[in-house]
Image (cartoon, rainbow, N blue to C red; front, side, top):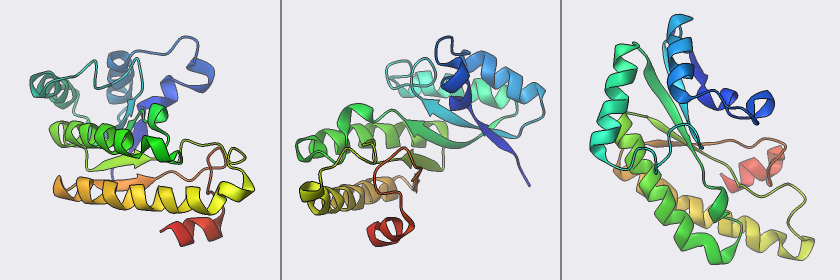
Length: 172
């Protein structure tokens, strides 16, 4: 068995005002005996802007290898391209594609997604269209991820739309 911890835990919640750097987080996890890290794709951790090239990403991989940490997943920042909004679909898929490239470059087997939208942010009359739009968008995203042999993990927590068991099964 291998144990991994998400670096996002040091960017949000009690650390939101003063996030712990990715380098310091990774070193701490390594020293504590963790086997891996789920990488937070939100600033100030591992973003497309901070690691824009394959070369920069190779340096990140070397850093993690030196710490004997594997990558268990990548949780990108997709908040600007809410998949619930029709006008955002193309932008969502393009940003998703770029983040799948990040996954492939850093050896992440998984990319984490969520609906971005809050559970009460969708009007009743827009519910079905929004639900279908997310399903269609993620079907296309799954094809993109499949080409790079990256799995998608959907985080359906209470803070996001479509989080009820019946919705999760129906969307799947």
